[in-house]
Length: 367
Ligand code: IPM
Ligand code: MG
Image (cartoon, helix red, strand yellow):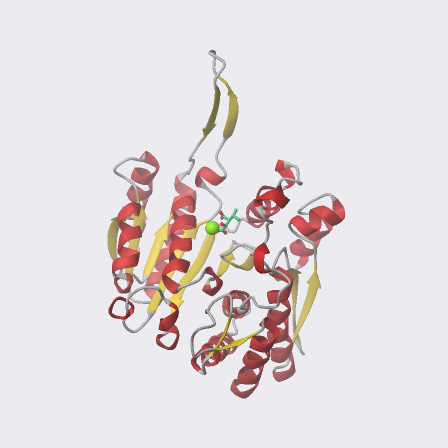
């Protein structure tokens, strides 16, 4: 019997719909080549959902996500000015994305910071620093810390406005993400960089205590301790020293954008957000409203998110590998898009759809 998976597709805002369209072509091709069916159900999410329905995460979308086997989500958000037209609580980050993460309990965020040799020219780092390419898996805790801690805003006795946001973690939350990171390290080079700020934050002190406990279950993994500020420097100076990195939510947010920086673009950053029952897959970047609708955004992060979905939700490792290979071959054949590459190079610039065509051609050969 044909295996069927239901996928909720939240195309999102800005360049979201354009790059999502290319990602769906990849799923359609796999359906043609394999005895498999993907029931893709589109649902409104983000600023576009707010303007249509008055909610950035409408009830109907929640229901579609709840009944899906996996969720493919495009970037969300608007320019600063456009955001101001939406009430604070309904802005897509606060009103849609964080509630989605909380609802699905996607505590483990996998952010590959990866640049194969043939794409090394995208990195702004010197050739001798990039070497044979970059291959890091950043594991970010995604539903704790400052993002979800108690928040308070008020006035002091003296009438001064103040805010108080708390960085909260309990040991279960820390333990579960650390297990994920150690397991990932076991699958790779068995080296885990633990990124923290224990010289200042007691949340990091507890984090590191739990790490020592969890590490006992993985005696083969070498743990390297690194402060988050130092990690930022090391990522630029010697990214090759990292294999798996693990860190709390806010540090992971910042370091993953820096990861995009050393690759040459956040457009090269797909991600997987894993919960105990369900996962959703999304680019790590924003919705790039400045280039939306121009058909120039590279679909790599969205198609990469599909590859992660195939691998992590559907156990289709061979197909996932083929998707990565197809995308890399298109870059290696000398093609790119103008969001990633400036015009004064030998590289042939394609539109989003043409880049998608090339990927599909290549994948068709590989599958
Ligand atoms: C990310 C994004 C989000 C975050 C924003 C959009 C809330 O920057 O996924 O990295 O901060 O987690
Ligand atoms: Mg971010």
